[in-house]
Length: 518
Image: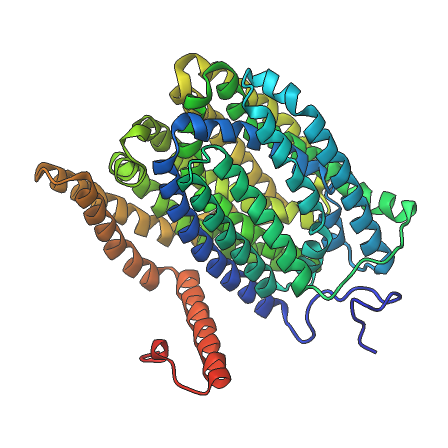
């Protein structure tokens, strides 16, 4: 008999019936790519509009409030969702136990955030921060209501549904943020954006999911699931401290305006990580978990994923390094010119960090949350110390010291995963070689184009457009010709698009213009 999510006695299905791991991996990467494109376009448009409507001080004030979010969201499910995905079999008692534990903790954290908001405002010596933190704390409860269903979607590899609800949340949040900022809401526009995303994505998740929690709870099951989760939550807490220590120190000692400039620069260069690497990593985690006994297969998937990540993030970040002054001036405005040196320092760092981040899901799928925790326990003090040292030279010093620490630490994570999967470094370099060739050719071309266009005394906007056009014209053909994974994934995306168009034609009973020539 086929078990369903509504069958209380049945172990949860691992994936949709008949869906092979190869097909699941392809679907996950394809939908991650679609999600990345849609969210990235939306985020870029919103970021540009908000940067022109808000001052660095207003942006920095909201960034201070978001520091709290990272820590609390880590605590809000004690990583029980990951435990549901990683386990071979789960039943209704496991699912309902995780749901009620997450929601109960969400209530506690929301109440704690509201009650502690005056203390946080006092820590940064910013009285206006208190109401921002109090209202933002409502998001903790909203997020806790979606964590179990989101984990079940991930476990069942329902990548399409997961992508659609995140896209919907992103679009609604974008509209809310722009309207609020245009109305003169200031820092509140960013808070409204965050809450709108949490509320919309939660509503869509409950609409798309057929599972509903039952009034069941087991402390024994919670302890069993928590064995994996507690070690992971420790690593995530350390990771959040690692990620937010720079913002805390800059906000406390350099002020909200400096934090606003640093946040814009940091968020810009971390776009590949947040919009590409993390969605792909989430998609691959259940696949790795299912084949954790086949290290060779895991190694091949990991190598392919690393190639795809570097193929996208490498040219983006190195190209941004070249055109940072023109990009910041044209897109964000002259009031953000202080972000240019920070962007140039952190852009190459983002590529290496992306490679390390895509590797962590391998360790988690193998149940090695202890390894991740020990890595975080070593890397976090080193990174926080680097931030503290860099404060002496302002935001540029913080970025420089971070780069000097983050690159070797990311390399260590890559070495750990290479050894765990028994992959040879020669294999890794061989897989990356053609991507590195294409990237080197692109960098040489954009440097030459940048020099020439500047010598013609063109406006920053025209220089930016010209350099980007040259970079695309050089890099894309080389990649399609020389990098096999890129060529194959492009074919998968084309097939997915054609099948979507075909279904639309059947549904509406007429040909669509976009189908011509495919």
